[in-house]
Length: 243
Image (cartoon, rainbow, N blue to C red; front, side, top):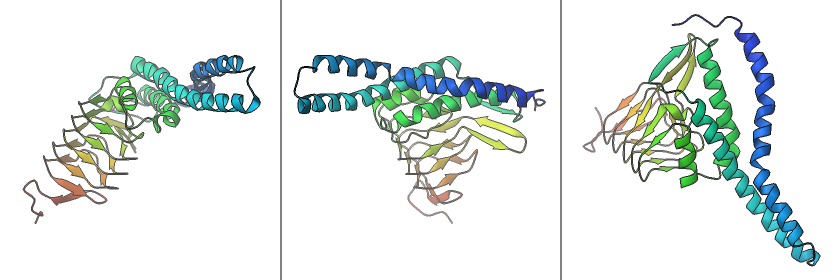
């Protein structure tokens, strides 16, 4: 374990002051295409009746919101692709450059959440997750905006991630931040609001029941069904219950 970073609190404070306005600027930049479209439609409809113009501009606002979602995810995805680390497993003190690096990526993901929740499951959401570092197999349906630490997550083909399932590639413990790869196989079902913690390996065809919590570094064999808090095996691959 590395030693804590000297002057961390000063560095954290200064970066917070600098990064907070950056987030709002990025949101503003994402609105630029929508603003341009609104101006164009406004000019084009200036001679129409008031009710006709209201309909046109109202529809434009709706399309503008959609454009904002696309642009927000694109900008954040590009930034995430530029700064995401390439790790398997790491432990570092809370007061470390690793924590600062992780915090930047977490901030970017939070900036994407208002748009992402409207774009899952879809190819748009999957594209964003891939840009942020998540490996996603063909045909997988990711119905949650809460896949955090994408650079630490691998998902096989034809897997379904339920609504608001939380997948965390990190944990903070007494000795600092822990980051570890999460590997989810093919044809897996992660239930609604389930939580998957760092280092978990989920075999092909496995099922994690809704609202279950999978402790860190849990390994689930192929085709088993797990549920509960903490999650335990409730059905073996052969369909029988464990002893």
